[in-house]
Length: 244
Image (cartoon, rainbow, N blue to C red):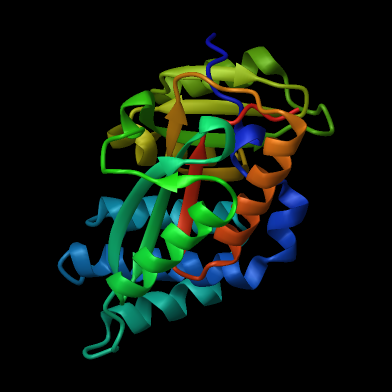
């Protein structure tokens, strides 16, 4: 199977994610609110595919069911006061790394200014829409932890393919399953029914190739990713930096 993407090169480590659970849950809650709004107010994931995708992501992040329920009730309530919109920015990080920033904001000017500042501060630059997205593919990505080695690679691969996955990749401590975006929910549901648990589950921008950085640029890139991670308006950052 193809080795075109390394999940650990894109996402923060699980330990770092756990340390920022509250921030993660807040960002997921924003996605739920927008998904309900764009789904005509439906809080039924069976009738709102985008919401189903976000709920799968929330559960992979260990967001408690009570939290999910409260967010959905808030989103369904009239006049909740939350009016977010999704905006995507593209640019280059240190050493020419391609970077896509997905934001969700109630103030476009504030977010645009912050994103531009984050790029500039660490030697990158904000570009025009489309300047780097051509080198990424949108895919559903499901990551199954196998740190304990309890899962058999061939069995997981067969289950994934039977569920409708496009691709499968085995690493030392996890399995990564790729789907077409429209097939993501069905594949996730089929694997969950077989009792697989996901470390990460979402629609991602997967780079077609990776670039390596010098030690100096790598340090600046890490700092830039950290400041994006701390920005409440930023939902996801995708890049093609090959770490390690």
